[in-house]
Image (tube, rainbow, N blue to C red):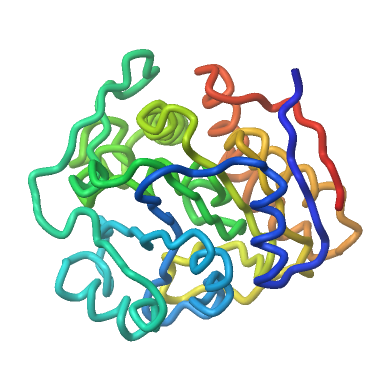
Length: 287
């Protein structure tokens, strides 16, 4: 059975909500809204006003976690100041899930590389999650989408180092690259399992740079905006985004594809599919 992925070429805050409603899911209880709040200096991240319509409708809480690298988000104090500077608190309730320890440990029973995932302990306060991903390139992962948000995004500062190091945090930048990608797939599975189906995904293909929103100095977007995708399958939605890049007639796609391929970005999707919590086979339903 192919997973359904809904797609529109119209990119507006109102369309984000429409795409969510196409999923015909009612996320229960206290909803965590996982998004990327942007590193200081980054010009490409999607701003609070872009997400306001969907977050207001769901009355969810924007959730983030501290980073594992130098910058303005690697301590709770600095991160909270930057979140305020970027305007997230103006509109929304914001929860820095690993603001204090100890981390919550999630078991990854069938993990290929890692058997534990370390996440912000406030995750326990939520009954469901909406994953709002800005699809673009990434310096290490090749691309960033739903799977990255589920793994690196929900992981605590220590958890991020643990994933990057493929289970050895001290190897954060030196672990074998494919083991890092497989660790992301492992970690993402634990979040999917934690919410027992009470989770939905929206990927926005806008401001597509080869660099992530975590980069203080990022390249400007290299290709035209493509659209908004929505799905209940994190693997299918990321695969669909990759396919749309390859199918584009925009000459700027070559730069993004080079970033994805030189980092073997597709391997995260391959590893996730092998774990069985989604499918690379999908039906793209254009609206």
